[in-house]
Amino acid sequence: MATRLLLRPLGPRLKATRHSTRPFSTVLDAPVDPKTQQITPPGRAQSAFKDAVVAEAPRTNWTKEQIAEVYNTSLIELTYAAATVHRRFHNPAAIQMCTLMNIKTGGCSEDCSYCAQSSRYDTGLKATKMSSVDSVLEAARIAKENGSSRFCAMGAAWRDMRGRKTNLKNIKAMVTGVRAMGMEACVTLGMIDAEQAKELKAAGLTAYNHNVDTSREHYPSVITTRTYDERLRTIKNVQEAGIHVCTGGILGLGEKAHDHVGLIHTVSTLPAHPESFPVNALVPIKGTPLGESQSVSFDAILRTIATARLVMPKTIIRLAAGRHTMREEKQILCFQAGANAIFTGEKMLTTACNGWEEDKAMFERWGLRPMAMEETIGEKLVVSTETFDVGSEHSTVA
Image 1 (cartoon, rainbow, N blue to C red):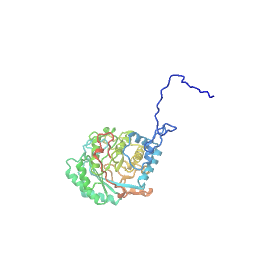
Image 2: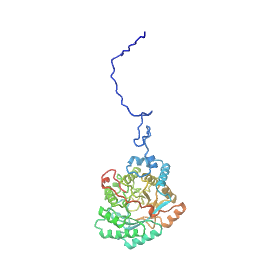
Image 3: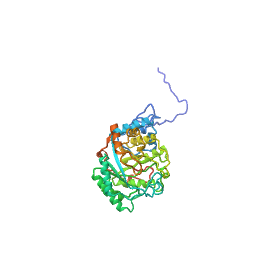
């Protein structure tokens, strides 16, 4: 006869415990990326640098921390990655040749610490009246004959365009004339309002240059007569008019590496990336507050170019002021790291410039060629007013 064993609890009855359930489990209790459903092991967070290397399209939601990670990558890895991305989005042999003409020199009321054209500083520069339409178009014709596809014909030392209706009329005639030659036309006229931007658009303007110069944080130590947000408002007006934005900065203004990161963050978090990003190296001019500044290190220039290429893969990156101080090998390193435009011709606004023949010889040695105009003009930028908050920390200019 079987014996029944009765098991009694040895202590007070325990309450049932409810356990939560989930559809699956893993050996490591690791976070899962909701988009890819891939596990990200602890201690191996997603790398902004690696994301940039494999990107197939631009993005405008960069954080300063992510850009800093890219910028601070070892230079040998950074430039290699930038070259890889550059080849994905651009022909590495094509360099846009741009020629700049200053149509009105000196007499500017601004206090930009680096600029010879400010009336506040004794630099020996004499103010001039605005150039005639015919003289500008003749200069554009010569530039085109020498291989330039963009004529930045309208550099003018003005704070803004208020009360300059006659000047604006002549500038529109210059723009129309340059475009009729089959060239891109770019101007830089200081601050402009929405209506002025629309007039320039109607004249056929390709691009408007309005640099932000440096990071938002460092900016007040360089300029006090125009705020960072005033620059952003001009960029907003230009973008909303459907004109390409050309905006960049100047390296060597007494800034730190984190200001290079801040500069790139400003332009890369626009509703749309700028069509072109000029990288200038300060050319110190005696008589200006920065006239005795030390030259910025080349590695800082190269890091800025390479980071900009990874963060803004479709943007034209222009090696601008200060290029004449670089040996040819340094220029080639910049091209390999993502720079694909230069200023060439007789001079910049008030500083020296590499000449056409010099650049043609360099192109021949390295297998480069002038970029055709159809390789640079894309769809015009149309920006919704709701997406551009000028007062925002993340609003930035092109």
